[in-house]
Image 1 (cartoon, rainbow, N blue to C red):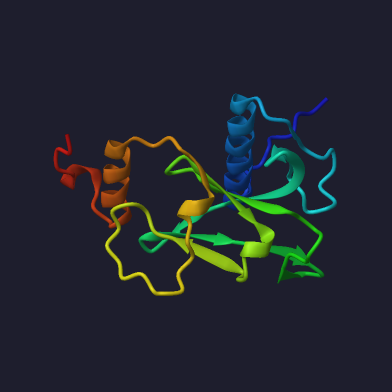
Image 2: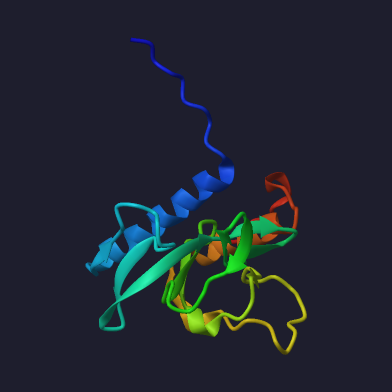
Length: 166
């Protein structure tokens, strides 16, 4: 028998799997019901006990992009990206691996194909129509020190240039 050497997984697939693992772990730690379909046929990553009922959740993991994070809320359909249709899912579970945060966004509250999130401490002028993330945050486990360090790194300051933050 010949063993086949596994190929290195595609990084976006690996990142997505890490986000799903983090999401699942959060609900397991809380003792909430969470289950995943045996087959990935219906765009649902998990069924979760949320708000007193079972809801269908698709987990999306943010990626860094020029000093902020972006989350693509579209799915592949017929070979191209499209928005989710009503009735396909109930919530997006948005994960930030860097900041150890999870947001639960009702699908009905999302009206765009992607969302941008700016880390704490990021200096920017918010537009009047920017997405209001805070109301959907369900976990925030990063320490203030880690948030400050990450904010410096997101602004392309390398670790040798960091000042003492404590």
